[in-house]
Image (cartoon, rainbow over all chains, first blue to last red; front, top):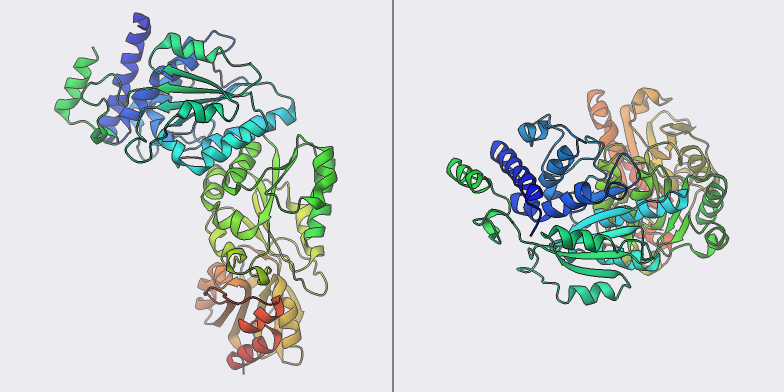
Length: 260
Length: 292
């Protein structure tokens, strides 16, 4: 069980995500909900000297950019962006679109959306920081469906070859890839790249934080975060119809009530 | 041109701590010393072009300037979306240096041809395209532009013109006077054009970059109001830059480039030039049919 106070804060973030989606008639709610606990741990619950502070050296790259709503919610929670994202999401002049844009929001590290780009981009950042003598942690979150992309496996080869232990790869294993090309034995596959692999419940904060503690063991850390797509709203959970859908007024009220 | 690239890129890596070299397992021998001396900034990254581009963009996002090199189709066509998004959309600077386009590797066949590279890359807003016709031209452009803050595409050719022509980015130079019509040729096809048209009364202009041109920037009275554009790739990119102006000025245009077909022949580069009607004799015949 998570801390009640944290759960309440995360419920509020879920409400903001639903509200933004409702207003814009756009957004990927279930994918955002599956990663929210992970981002909450990375940006808020990790101890002060280790949690992500993009104004300092550590970086977070959301490779599965369609979960941008979760990123906006967390960035507001740590005051890296203002609350306006909720009411401007998807609007013509907004800085906050269905996929994150690094040239519009300084605390966003990569403009992602097309899958398979964020991880090799993160490798470039890690190698650059090695060359520049900057010590840092770079977290990259990819989806399990994104593991279908060849560039992800190319990246695994590179991470392994250069032993990029500065990198933490977090796989949001919300099973969205299963209906097309299921990746079986994911843990063994990742271990074959000599990664330090942790297989956890991606909604339990204790497990997320404990897995992140394995950073710094001189091997790249790969965390398989087993999550539920649409976590927190029972009607959405594991329901592919909600992947890219927005609620009706009635559903909106029901969802908001259920999060109270 | 590859030798010139090795010299210039090695020098940049040696003298600039913000530069980084990524090789797609191509040209590795020429960079042996650089790879050994600067292992944190020079990599034979492997045969994984799409990731190589994204890795390069990651370097650029940290303030380093990548120089990325492999054979044209693998870089441009296979990894185009990475170039478009990771460099183009994110507005990151870098240098893509290809070799082999359009059909330099004539004996290797279609898989190694890439006459569409410039047409494709020209769709990326802000990209600077360099089509040097000689190693000296490449060296000049590369030295002046590798750290320009833009995404640059340098198209190395295995076959080059007899001598370099010094031009800045966007410049066009008149090489021959004439009164019947005008030819504007890009990069490595200049040799064939000069040979083919040497005894004609046709004005010849040369460019080795693809920039936003204006006819006003050309030292010409536009003789005969007829212009032939000769491009060493699929026709079109140069016309896109000036087509509207040509129409407004009522100038008739003929476009010559690599024909849009798979070149299912092998043999030498010269043989393929003839097969594609891009050798000096064919060019002369085609151009004189238009500019009588």
